[in-house]
Length: 419
Image 1 (cartoon, rainbow, N blue to C red):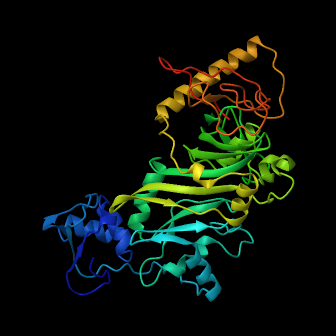
Image 2 (image 1 turned 180 degrees about the horizontal axis):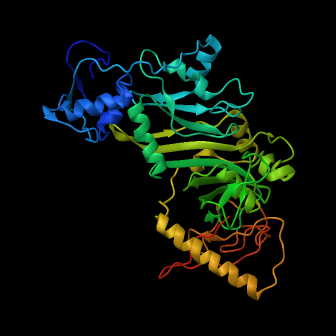
Image 3 (image 1 turned 120 degrees about the vertical axis):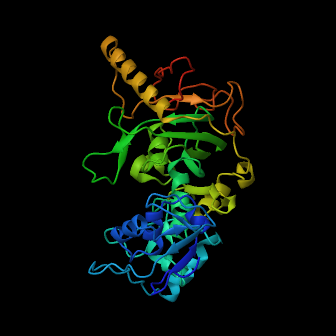
């Protein structure tokens, strides 16, 4: 695209791939923010804006390669707005930003975020990923975040280079077409080796939104598919996690809710989340891989190496990274209509159970788990005595949680269980 600066002559711009499908008024907001919406509307009404020589309205959708004719002038006056000044980074900050880069191109920068570095700033937060993005700005637009990782979670973090690519990637995340794969070490071994957790989540009252909890009545639907990759006896397991929704702290809350907190996650697992011996007390949750569409065509498929503490714990527990290279089959589609039907059926069954049964209270929220593979399939390496409690009996109850029948979808199989 030719330069977006103001001039006294007619200007022409070629619509880039990042702006394919964007509305005309949105294009102006991205590339000529000094031209107000009122002026864009006036130009469109009077035919002064042309797309491939034809008149265009403010809601016209642009296509990559089209030529946009813009009349001279149009600067908004008296708005008082100015571009945010870019912060001068120190050499150490620039080195840190560069050391995180896994790959980059004209649309994206993919980082391997280390544990302990926040994604965005907050109260008393001096250093964070967002504050380091000026290191990649050069003379173009400032790169921007399109998703986030918890401060103590490491791994793949996607940064968009341009407003257009940010919109493109954000749509893939919100539409759930992006495939996010996490690795975690958890305390104990889930009795179902390949399953789905469904437990609605909400902000825990009294924590200022800093902590989530399972809320069967008012929580938002949350789904996590998990797969046990290996086990160290009954002490710990190495699991692969696929969040199918994007709730805050979803993976951490779900694993703690089924009685297998992520190693090092004291926030949700308490003292039970720490293993004795040489295992680090840092959290063992890593965004291992991201597969997402790219505006230029071929999808991004990026894998992030493990941080040092995680790799050391894997070695100490006898786990081999090569055992986690293969991707599992894609989970079944689950639409918003499915979510509503499942929630309605669950609420109906819950009321019925309350009327007809005396229920014991449990310290942890009850959930339902569905196995994602046929009963009888062995759980990798055993490392314990055959038949030991919690040693991976197919279809068994999750450790420490009472079983409860799940709601049935109309005309379909029992939905996957919540965790």
